[in-house]
Image (cartoon, rainbow, N blue to C red; front, side, top):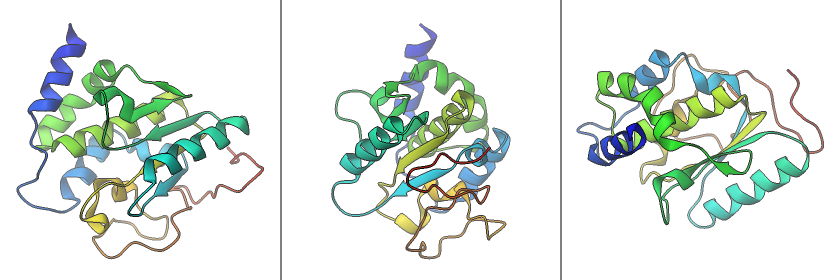
Length: 181
């Protein structure tokens, strides 16, 4: 029953912050041990077709032999479909339980808690790469941008660069080859 309690907790969180910005997300990720720094990611942005693009990239990376995490938003049927590892939905209740204490401590929103849960789950699963959909109406201040550029020590709410292929470790995903460890 812990799983249902954690999903109910997620649903009880506010979807809107009292104040926009990355401060809560940066603090939440720090409390979780910076899980977003343990894997390279492809950040999918745009107006239409993001989920399709995420699923296609996930399938292509999987076909290349990589263990892939995928994060989409919003969900159609259940919260669990938003976070996938190795082509399967994660056990969302268990994943939320790992993140919940830190999320409560920083007063995370629903979106921030779920995004941190995805990053923590990808790190825990040891994915080779993640494909992350951005769905914020304020894309330059999206919680997913808290991954940090390898060139900056802290995230900002400035316009995102056109290319988001660099991972926090500086590794880049290239077609036809797995990232080096």
